[in-house]
Image (cartoon, rainbow, N blue to C red):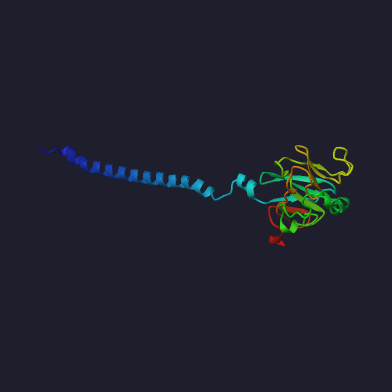
Amino acid sequence: MRNYANERNAPMSTEVDRGRRQLLTVATTLTGAVGVAFAAVPFLASWKPSARAKALGAPVEIDISKLEPGAMLKIEWRGKPVWVVRRTPAMIATLGTIDNRLADPASEQSKQPDYAKNAARAVKPEYFVVLGVCTHLGCAPMSRFDPGEAELGADWPGGFYCPCHGSKFDLAGRVFRGVPAPTNLEVPPYTFAGTGRIVIGVDQERVA
């Protein structure tokens, strides 16, 4: 016996099934598109340097316009302390008078850019840029700029002193003889960016 009721309902069921398939197709397509979009976010974000990456390698520009003569500015670059000392004429004058007391007065065995391989170890003698890390065991030396400090002796010309193991450096970061530190303090790459600004991490020649 023919089931007329089923025959009458068949087209409707077919239309409903077709509609469901279309709905599922659209839903699946949208879900896939959303998934691709979410997947693309971290992918695109990976092209942007993170704050940590910038901290580890990006140049750092600093304002030295208010740095007084005889004072020192401390910043951080690549996770290390960098010191900028504005030397007075008297401080600069001491640099050529104690070479016989230094282990590497010409900085032949020490690390610095070529443009800082001179008596002042600087592009401009007035400004001394150096990593504040002792070359012995990585301790942090202290600034001892006043000559003849009682702790360091009457013949102390001024410079840097590492209290951890007694290493001494002059006002150009050059190491004294007979102390544990093997080399002079390291001078990082840097350049002057106009008046009153220094960029740490960029070599002077690249912008000269």
